[in-house]
Length: 258
Image 1 (tube, rainbow, N blue to C red):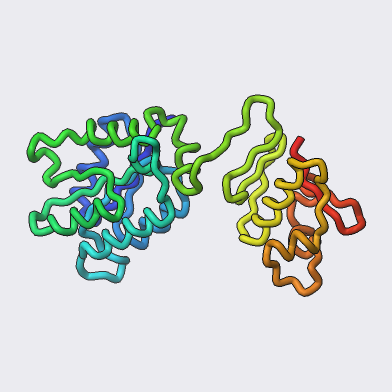
Image 2 (cartoon, rainbow, N blue to C red; image 1 turned 120 degrees about the vertical axis):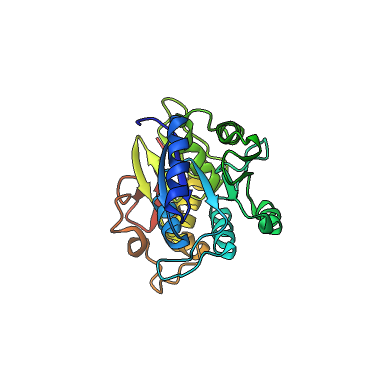
């Protein structure tokens, strides 16, 4: 369903996973499924989902012979390590709803809320009049994801904190950590910490009356381990070279923001 919210369902029991997926589809949402913690981590790396329905009892990987709450708990911890940020409503910007049907898991559910779960769903899904649709929609609304079109930005914010989006007509945009920068619609990615620190320093200079920065100074401030301290060694093969990052051919560099 194009333009629909997408749930990441982490559930190792095929029948229960199918039931949850069927319910989610009845809400107008799509879903992707992971059976194990390892599969869930791979899907999380790929992104493309709007919220998580996490069974507490899952297997660690395909070689596991039994499901444990510890696997679900450690997965939740990993999700919150990567997506820690909250909306002004105190809801996480990436909602995680924990699913549990074992009364003995009460302590685990309490721990899950402490780690970062946003709501709780009891198995079977029809028990206690649980309104799964209402809970999911509440979490999405409180996370600022009432409409799927908002989810891309909210996912960026969930991982990186507040994202300053370019206003219409603005040429330059960046994520808070400078792992992504856009100039006139062209996206540049900087996965390395040193690259990000250098681009941040060049951007700070670009906002002043002295936009040109010594490459050696910028690299030293970024804690580069390059013995030669050459900007070309860090960015010379990057698409930003000569487009986003300009050289004066005398060892100084500036960031293009217009």
